[in-house]
Length: 477
Image (cartoon, rainbow, N blue to C red; front, side):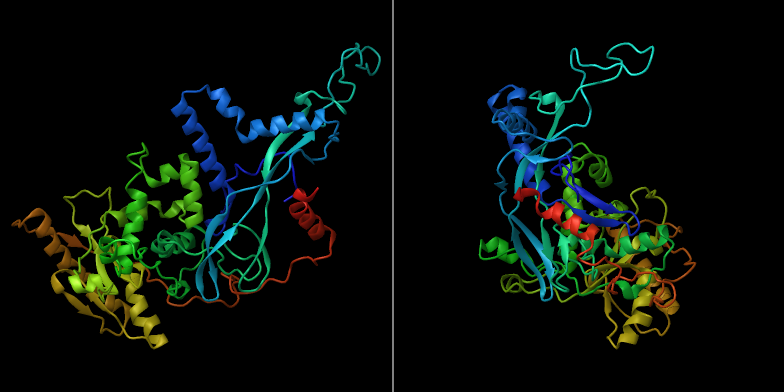
């Protein structure tokens, strides 16, 4: 947080490699990048020299402000940052945040200014070099000082954006704007997006495997649901789209990410994250991690039963009433001549969470019964419904496998046509170990997001005070 000559307007995000999630996103990058794209677009449209467009860039303005600051008789000391222009307000940023009563929208207005600093490298001035030691020629070592110089080559200049502190709506602790989790109570500050909800279980499972942790189903937060259908009193056609199912919203979010990367010249969603900075910013804001890119593509191309609604239900914005359905997500690298593996390529969409068959078996047989919740009905194609009536997770899994095989056989004939063959169209691999229903929180120290930390230094200590002054008083000089 200490101010330096490196600009913070080009920083996109910060990634937590331990928990494999984005920890912070630079919100002003959206405004800065939008202005940069607009500037280059006008340069191409007007057919003006690119140098003229770059002169109006933030770096060009910072250089011009430094020249004007020095010509006015102001002095920039060595290794001490000085503000060379008055702060300008950026356009208001609209963001969705998590509160005690759910997600809400908030606006934030940031300021930006240009800064300059005198470098610590002593320049060689003509006739001022000093020889040191016997046998060294004159000007062998740099001598003289750049203090008071009007030469722009002796200075470093950049444009910086103000970093504000926001209060957590749960514990009222201060956090840097753009932080996803409160650093005191570890509650989520940024509202969950539909893409984040669709990939949440996949991200938790991959994180547990790569960090040697335990994946348990009780860590899934079913309270976070997709945002309501984004329609209002606009047109009659838009109103008929209201009331869609949670799974429909999740699949729309996946198709939004997977539908454009090929048109833009990218090979996959992960390739676009690595090569497109602005798309990386959007994914960091939506908490879509690189580990879940392939899962998002498979969700966009999935096969799911369609539960139609009447015209009256559409006009009244009523849903389908189906909260649990079976969907197929075939692997894109699988040979279509090989049978489908329902253990890996069949998924159950249950209350806006996508679970594999072993995970759904453990959820219904152990976790839901322990919580006193009713077991759901699994809906398939052509009105097929499977009740969950077994006592153990293994028995539920066997019933799910048989149901998924029968459903895939029907779908296979609908797509490929009826074929007389003795080869199976679907199979199921053995499950080495079922996921845990509850995590053990005692003795291991893992997954302590719910505990409040007490290791912060006192507010009046030198380190904390120095950090606060540097971050808040940069623009007050």
